[in-house]
Length: 380
Image (tube, rainbow, N blue to C red; front, side):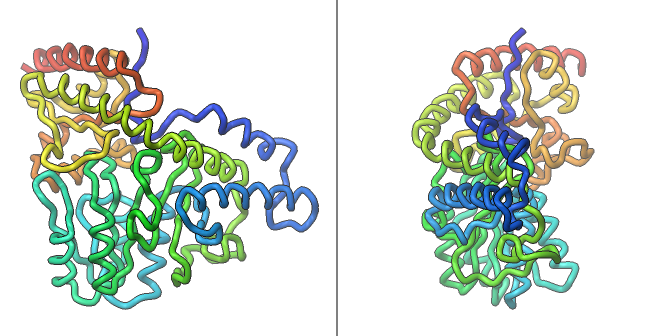
């Protein structure tokens, strides 16, 4: 039986062009980019070429791209590093990725005022929601809101939100990890001062990401060390991973419009098939959503049993954020949307990618229907 991978929000298959680009820096080209000899200069050149690729996609100068170990570090560098240099509150939402929420809680524990933006019934956050939060917060150092929710796919009107933040004198940080390769994630398009990216969400390697920042921002580094990444992120560069990220981000940007259109059709097809089943409803249905995510609540089933049965049936999906895998707690995002703990645990996230076909979507929906009926029969 052919397995159907529909967990692209967690990670994506490596693109064919990425590994060949990385291999020289995993083998003979072993130099440290900080070394002045020929192998070091070759490694430095590779890092800077990758930086230029990411910068072109983001519409910025190369020096505005800071490579990190992934989006979690980029989120932390933005939230902790930007607020360290500014007075005022931190404004975010209860729907954010754990990396932003835990960093925000750390700031709150240290005495920084933390204000949560209220959201609409589907998880939507608009300019009016942010304006109200900013009024409650008073002087605000940073607004941190994600572009595409990693669990529900709800899409932020980032440009409108970013302009509200700017009018209030606050910086705007946007985690654009789930939007990369499908949305315009440039600083200009998002009206953002800083944007976090991750390579493995677009066919690149795991363990590398970037924080892209407007020029002139003061950022306190998370780590103490050398002068790599202009001191914002000290430590020896992961050259091969950075090279792979440059290739993957550039290719994803080139295919963005075509892929977005194709996935929009596949998402609509999958939603129609899933929600036609009794007791299956769409989480975040009231909000504008990106084209990759389909998160459904399934009444009358145990979520863990459902996921295991789907895996046995060759449908590879998840219960929510991969960063929360193994947790016994229900999704904080779905709880914030008003679902009960039981409903949140009975929800499943499907996420599409560039390899997904219409035949796979139809087959996954058919297998899902069979599995749900079987799980309900067992539960009864």
